[in-house]
Amino acid sequence: MAQTTPNHTQTVSGWAAHDSSGEITPFIFKRRENGINDVTIKILYCGICHTDLHQARNDWGITMYPVVPGHEITGVVTKVGSNVKTFSVGDRVGVGCLAATCLECDFCKESQENYCEDLQFTYNGIFWDGSITYGGYSKMLVADHRYVVRIPENLPMDAAAPLLCAGVTVFSPLRDHDLHKTPGKKIGVVGLGGLGHVAVKFGKAFGHHVTVISTSPSKEKEAKDHLGADDFIVSTDDQQMQKGKRSLDFILNTVSAKHCLGPLLELLKVNGTMVVVGAPDQPFTLPSFPMIFGKRAVKGSVIGGMDETREMMELCGKHNITCDIELTSPDKINQALDRVAKNDVRYRFVIDIANAPAATVDDDQICSNL
Ligand code: NAP
Ligand code: ZN
Image (cartoon, rainbow, N blue to C red; front, side):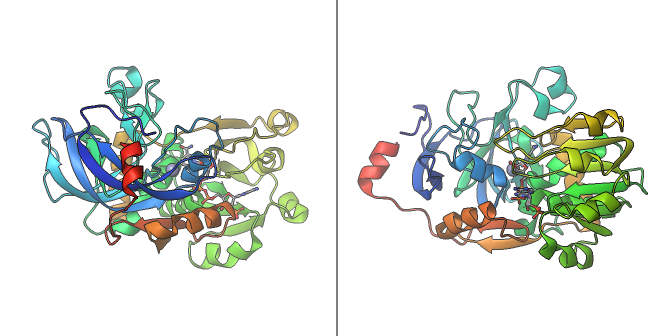
């Protein structure tokens, strides 16, 4: 049964998973009224991140059902609270993974809200009022304006949606290592999926030599011809991996499944760094020799702060960077999730929410949900 607080009065149509089968079905639920710091957003599009699959199927053991996934949200502002000076009705906006943070810690003060200890996510989080958050697989969202960003006019709302998570998640570690302003490095991107394909685009926009390291030989031609990758290494091919040893300054690892980091670390030069952003449900294998004999580092990174998200959006507007998407509809979310699980998407599904009819459910289901 949905946990909503009594003062949540707005009925919203959405799509939710109810158990670890991860099957998504129509779901009617309540959202809070638009508060003084909030904006209400009519959702147009929502990307399907691999995290949605992890959460819908309870891969990480932390899912609170029913879960309305979706944190790659674009839409139009329909209401603004009295404290909100930065947005107006009609603005094109996006919401990513953040729903609430403490606003007081050093991380929040420096706009690294993504490292706030009290960080609450857009879905499967607990908002300030105690309610469980519901994400973007829905027709409407009420969001605190501090976690909302503007979408540049030249970017299409569907292909821009995945930038809100996939985009900032790969932008943040690149920026953190000054790779947004020091061109000419050799960068590796492991896993050419939703996150990985944006990382290739950023790497090229920032003037680097980009090598894709992939388990899918079938992605090579497109990675080079279309995404602009300079090199492509098939990670299951020992010869190619041997040839690539000690060639890279930096690796971004976006892989969603358990794997061994050792051979990937060997691709780094001495003193190179691998940043892991992928979040498999099982631990990586991390042998010590590739680290100690190459003085190599392995770090992690989670999404990005709000200033970084704004910076990334502006940069995407300037360089016309969007995601390569396959548009789908709410009634086909389950097929899309199955294809994400099978690594069969080039490179991100985006749900067309604007053109979808409102979710309908049986009357008895509405009662139990509300
Ligand atoms: P995705 O589109 O499914 O891409 C993941 C890629 O990983 C696949 O395209 C595939 O690339 C590779 N892969 C899949 N299974 C593999 C296996 N068994 N062995 C080796 N490689 C494999 O997923 P995504 O949306 O980009 O998300 C990737 C991961 O990042 C997920 O775990 C997600 O939860 C996590 N994530 C983390 C953050 C964060 O803040 N840190 C934010 C968003 C997402 P190839 O075909 O090229 O091998
Ligand atoms: Zn995501």
